[in-house]
Image (cartoon, rainbow, N blue to C red; front, top):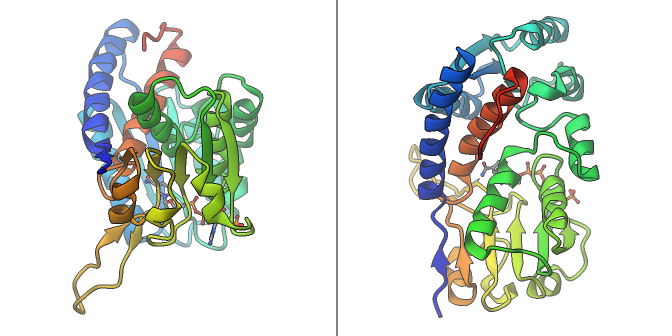
Length: 295
Ligand code: NDP
């Protein structure tokens, strides 16, 4: 048996097209474009690449993009003051501070300073609490993107056994909360989980968010299961000076022999994250301008 490949790239492209149309209607109704502010501190090359692609995608969707690049030695107070300004700026519906931040800045202080109603990353404890208690709020982009792919693949998820491997605040925990909301029976596994392979073998849905190359083996997977691989790991370069291959947390070739459907890396979950960021910003704009949002 060979699993089908879940094409996150195509799904995300279609979602972005739909968002661009909805942005145009919003513009007409509200007399302004939705606005996303992205704050980058320092020169981390990976962060710079993410910020650049977020900017390009925001502009391509017809939204306003407000970029703020601060030097690595900016003080925490200066960064918090910028967030206060963005919180008060009516043109801005979403605020995102690119992580990680330099060591002298307390990430939690920054995340909690963002107005929860502009927190399109969904990292504010108020939004985490809303998700945990079933209230309406912003859900972190990566797990929400995973859920969209799962529902597209499987339809109703109620009653399915799901395992989420990894319990970070930005992926694993919100993913487990979303699947619980969909009435899955959820196991949240982590580095202290005993006999992980047996836990994975029970699952109809496997979401891997660990950050360890090809850790989840094909023979851990239940035949026919749906596998969502969030991990992005760069293998050592074969030749000095070249880039190593990107691989996920799942042994893709092994999983393809057993699973029903698998997301590839790259081209699976990755493209969904930015598309959902745009969606969250669009939803925020509708809410703030009191324009009804038609999904
Ligand atoms: P974190 O490092 O914050 O969390 C990793 C989790 O994996 C922890 O909960 C840890 O457990 C668990 N873990 C570590 N080793 C094991 C093990 N041997 N067995 C079981 N669990 C283990 O990572 P993130 O959640 O931020 O990211 C996870 C991966 O997803 C990374 O590769 C990252 O690059 C990728 N990612 C991709 C995104 C995308 O857009 N596609 C977006 C965000 C992340 P414990 O809590 O016990 O330490």
